[in-house]
Length: 338
Image (cartoon, rainbow, N blue to C red; front, side):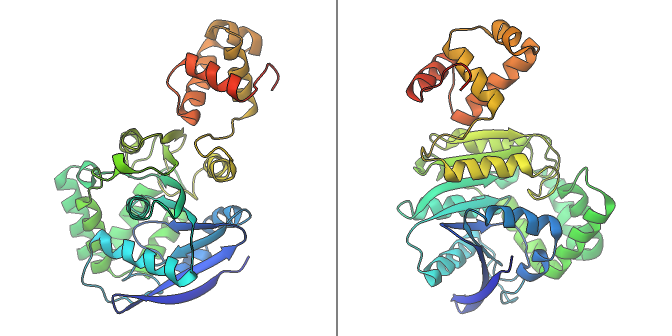
């Protein structure tokens, strides 16, 4: 699949953006630094977005100061990125669209949804946070920034090992190179420092767009608890915990993440994710009034596994109790064997 790269202008600076795929538009901010052309050559990255491009027209962009966008940048506030994305959207003449923000891009995506509630249909946040000071102790953040500025090669390798925890050395080395190609040491450090200073807690309770929050439970770059807090502050948001350590969505095991995204985007009911066959069975059995022990016996699984299935159902549907599961099952016509 080919991508089409174009340019638009914001604040007197050229911003590069790319489109690929077909169908309704999904605007994507992949976070921190990027390079549209170089990253498209990465098999893991390209496979991930080509999968989404089967059901959506994917729009990605390089933040001002990075990638194919103009490299000169003085203002590193997150508002610059929001305005850049607004310029891309205006250039494409988009009236409505879905938004996916990963890592730092989740903050930009949430701000965009806050400012344009009539245009954003659905919001997806992966591996993100609300308050940057919670990412790490101050001394750790200061050390990382100093390392990037002093030795970008060593800094990029250090960050790759954090972002791609659990991946092989070749993947980490490749992403380290991507970071260095995408931005200079100073721009990378300034953008990361701005991330540490970010705080969007004030806008989250006011979001009224259907929202899906995805986060890997062993993420070492952005702890899972920060994603949980994001979901807790957005009315009606659905939190889907995922297994894995890799912070970048297209590494590790991306399929559960892709399945959740595709299900959320294509679901007619904007607040409900499709359930797996096992989860459907659990819903049907709960609707029949079975306890967790009885569900385990019927499904020939341990009671602990049955409890885990039920918890995933609650997370996916944004429900809090078995009573709500029963009501949901009746509303959607679930029966045993559904």
